[in-house]
Image (cartoon, rainbow, N blue to C red; front, side):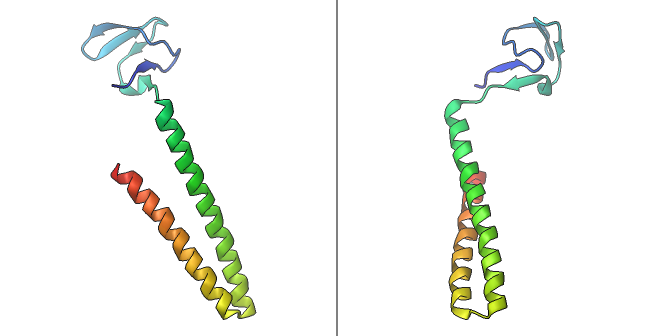
Length: 105
């Protein structure tokens, strides 16, 4: 169960007025779910940051690889082009596998 807090003041204690309405100590009447703020678990927050960092590193590597591939095409270096293309495919797969895995969870 997620812990809720008031979006405006951060208070975690509410008075129930009716089925769809609560009153915070700051005086705000909270009627919608968007009036609340959910508290995230530190463990999941750390995993989320690691995943975001991994994705950012992959995206920057993909960008650098595409630049190198362009320069190989300009210089007509076919062997280097093949090597970089395989590495680019590997990075794309890793990025998409991570994305699909996180969607399944």
